[in-house]
Length: 165
Image 1 (cartoon, rainbow, N blue to C red):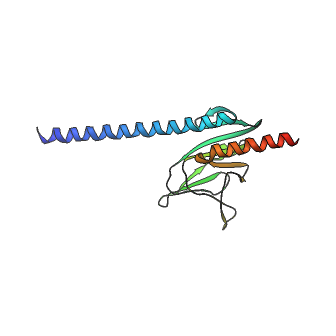
Image 2 (cartoon, one colour):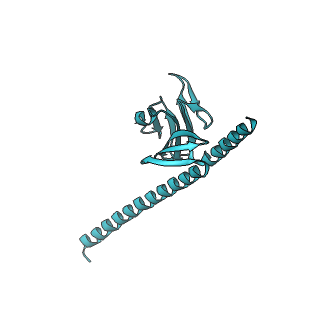
Image 3 (tube, rainbow, N blue to C red):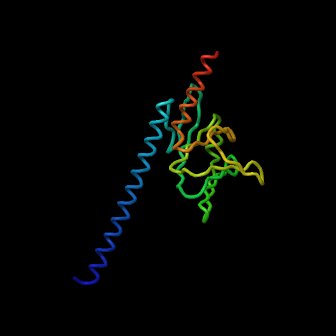
């Protein structure tokens, strides 16, 4: 068998492997989004608006919801309400979320599959960690791994508030 056919078959095999890997990654992402939406629907009413943008009603209160895919490398830093940064220690990527932030209702940002630290700049030289119970700029930031626990707590708090009234 001539060398050019061997090289051609290796090239085709590599292309097929890359294509297969791409399909597997897309399937895993779709499965994560399905799991997240299932949890959200368990606790409230979810309506899809655009790709990974939703309207969510939790305890009768409307929210704009964003599913934000961030790799598990590095950290997430909120520089301002509109400029969010993914810092993987080699090449920081800034994302402009002006369109999402400009919506009038409270907002929920669910970050997946990221499981690292989430920070925000309080001012020019103060950085603080962000937790789901802290609202920053009228939005709550939640890691996908904490979502069900947070929604369960919110549901219990709402029920306790109703029984007190």
